[in-house]
Image 1 (spheres, rainbow, N blue to C red):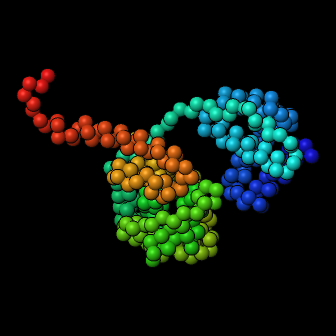
Image 2 (cartoon, rainbow, N blue to C red):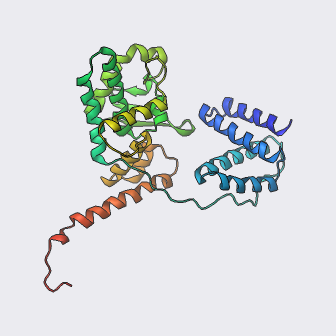
Image 3 (cartoon, one colour):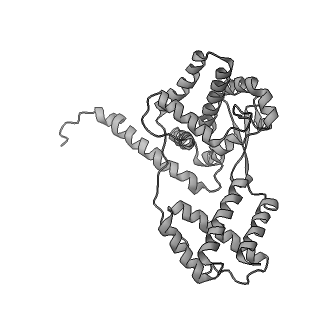
Length: 305
């Protein structure tokens, strides 16, 4: 078999035996085919080193890192299957310095304004259909901030993943890792309940909790458009994405003194290093508080320069 044929077999292996998500296997397929095209199916250390260098010239560090990880996983598979006898990644430097980009958060008052705008929109609905759509919008926006879940996780929720009676949400995150999140805010629970009552027929027909007007699973793109719509409604002139609700959720919890390991479990991070970046964001808030609100500011010290 040539390299492209081996890649096809590997993608099938990832789908059927490793049970990776469709999104992950598609990314693997794209990344590995790109490698095969670049190297002209020559699989040795020299070509891999050249390819990695090229990746860092073309792509952002995060994208290059993902493509290298896909290639590493593939070479591991080749060794296990005895297709190659030595790991071509040996003695190859794959780590490059990445810029530390602090996660972007949404100001607390803007989150409040967005949620208020959605709830207020119920009073403006003139048809049952528009009311149902707003109930869905409210439920999605509330759950984004209440759980810190990824938008992909929210869009793929199934009816049995949400237990309103016991206030729990079962999420299948990256790598099919399962985690349970409690929902204890009564307004959020009420919003989810109202949505479920309005959409229960569509929910059980599609097999997904959040559905669109075509009775299909609500897409991530639809959620992004929804967020943009309410951001515009409140007159906020900064770009906001659904993922920024996740960043804000984590940052505000840490600012309130929640232990970072607890935040890690809620977010579903496999490494606490991923969660620690929110400490830097919270530290900026701490600096603002100490600068503006420290009682030392109100002291008039005699003789102080």
